[in-house]
Length: 441
Image (tube, rainbow, N blue to C red; front, side):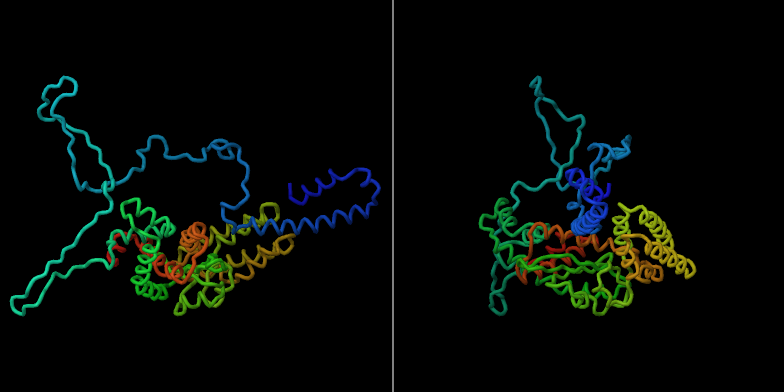
């Protein structure tokens, strides 16, 4: 039952019958109308906390029949691998060492066993018993036989006492949303007794410095791409409201922490960009002439409106069918005739929404998008949704949940530079540890 109906019935039920009978018909009508106004305000309040953009972890949970069965009672919620499957398994690398476990005497009779007749094998992946190794480097001095000067070998050693492997692991741990205190505790447990929070900061600052030029190169490359995904998410700085902006291609991830949601932030990132920007409906992106509005956002919004309104549900079905048509058109060269048909269908959906109560928000959303809903159909390879940006911002959301906020400009530089480059390496399938080790000093 609709929320308004539930509350009205509850109010009528709890009210005393005698008092209601004493009221005139007009008085009862006035009471009902006043209740409806209050209930509309309550619904608006609920929508602020439960809408298509609310994270799944924050949504109101719906009842299920039981924990193991889907609503149809047949299909398990977690079916796993089908019967008879060989399983996924993992591909093990070649062994670095082969250890043979032998017996000289029989454990039963005590007699000599001779040569083995066969073996079974088990491969394991593990770390050495002592993870942190202390190495004393002695750089020998020599006297030049010609000049008599002291000469020594040219060696590549870290600035401090901590080596490149350890520094790289520290950077990877911080990228996994660990705090400086937790990283320092972890390192002390592994065998570095004097490792401190300040040392974590020092190491991560050095990576920010070393990767700054690579981040600039990636940003230049991104600005030459035919299309990019753009999105932003909230992220506080030292307790004050702020945002992290993100611009992405299939192989590049650029992030930028800022104190506002103003369009100047995205202008700085894409100041030389000439292609298509795939975005949601936020008006900061209106500065770009070529935009593709996200159909996934529109469909989620439509679905939310259709929950309690059958008339909107009919148009929601039409919208989903239109989206399937657009996905097919998006794989082909531009067909102006078919695109014109698709535009007519979307406009007709807007026309139908005009006579449906409670659909004003949807009409405004679609009309504000204009022809930006169809930009991808004219540009090869451009997707109809902005899901890639949402996936790339997910680690930033997890970082925000873990640390709450970043504190200063050093925290901003870590997000802008190091997180951008590490996420780019992951998109490119590059090994983070090897690449970090190569630049550590």
